[in-house]
Length: 101
Ligand SMILES: [Cu+2]
Image (cartoon, rainbow, N blue to C red; front, top):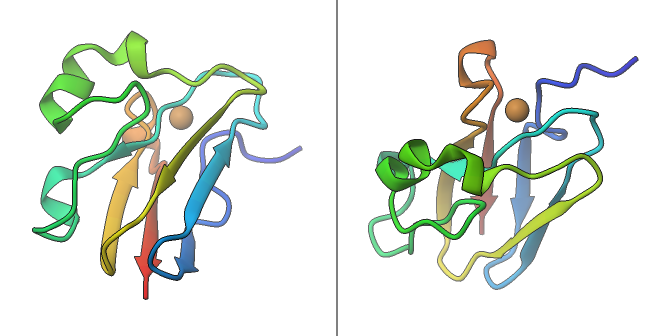
């Protein structure tokens, strides 16, 4: 049985302009939430739920939850390294990285 508290793959490398789709293949809810201080300065903030800041995402967590079987996608328009996490499972180490070339 797969561990339901992780992003798979944990680190992904894509080209600038590509879209990443996260699909919730577990049976519990998750978020995809960028770490505001772990994205390039010129990049827009991103999070499931469409929040404009990490603080807003954390404050309104239920609006950002991705249900089992549902997806969240985001297009990366700036090169760099992007760190993100799942709010409910951050303490379980549910974090990931997108490398945009
Ligand atoms: Cu999670």
